Length: 390
Ligand SMILES: *Cc1c(COP(=O)(O)O)cnc(C)c1O
Image (cartoon, rainbow, N blue to C red; front, side):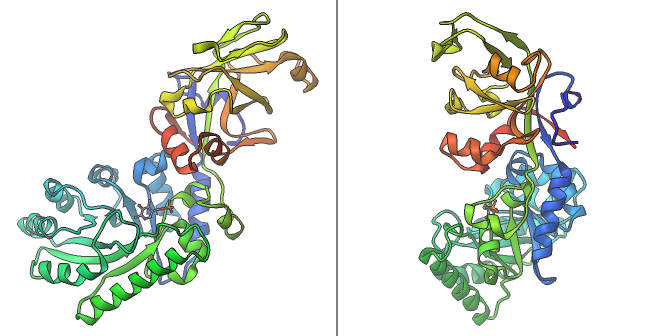
């Protein structure tokens, strides 16, 4: 039912929306949980508003299906989850500004920390309210993005370990090429991480929870799962690479729909949208408008390249995508062959991404056309469209 184009799902104020199928989120979360040993925790990564899917609603669905912890990118994202009543551990995956240390302590967020002054500020803030704040140490094993180089980890731990207001809850790294099977850089990163964990233990310290896997690594290299895995994209039903597709059954959770606001049948030669980059080459073509545009995440780079679904039929998007609208073409005769007496009509539901009848437009299809990855496609659709949770 939820996969059908249902006009009743449209929000009252706007004929364009994102549908989030929480059953898909739950089923994907369980699918990952089922692959893990009992001793391995599942961190659900819900940064960037759960990759555009709505962090609070998704996190609640994930808790019901076995989430042990959550990963976010910013302090604000963490606070929003706490204010919604979530009590599971929340890890901020990169070190936030030192000014935010009191908020991290107040809301029991577990930030990544790689500067001594940040870790000590966190400790001061926590101690002031009688708490012990937890932090995670990221190790830069080759991604060159965040954290400490392996050689500096023990010294960092020793430099902050005197503070009673903090404790190290985990040590982690992030792989740059986990989606490439048997990749040399991936193996080198694994080796450096294992050596770093051993060095921490040899120095007589506890690394806390050891975690390094994203979706791709946990599926392609099960031996690297350690104490916890950090799964993001897979929870939303999307694959990080073609190579993971045979390894787990996932259901995409996001669909993007709109209702037709206008249908016309212009004469041959008429132009469509800014710059008139599309012109009708003949008669019997309807041009339908839907109120969704690049400000909603339907990238302008899709102009004249993508397709949309209407009544189970694929139609070409035509003309430049505008900020708040886009147009598509319906060949009247083809639609008639398709068994439609009236090809398309005002108010009819159009699927920009998702399933309609036996057709589907995937985030991967749009990503390929845009020259990007499915992650960016769903994040972008989260920007302005109202989310309807099914
Ligand atoms: C985003 C992120 C993840 C999740 O990656 P996916 O590919 O979406 O599974 C895991 N760890 C870190 C540090 C991240 O930034």
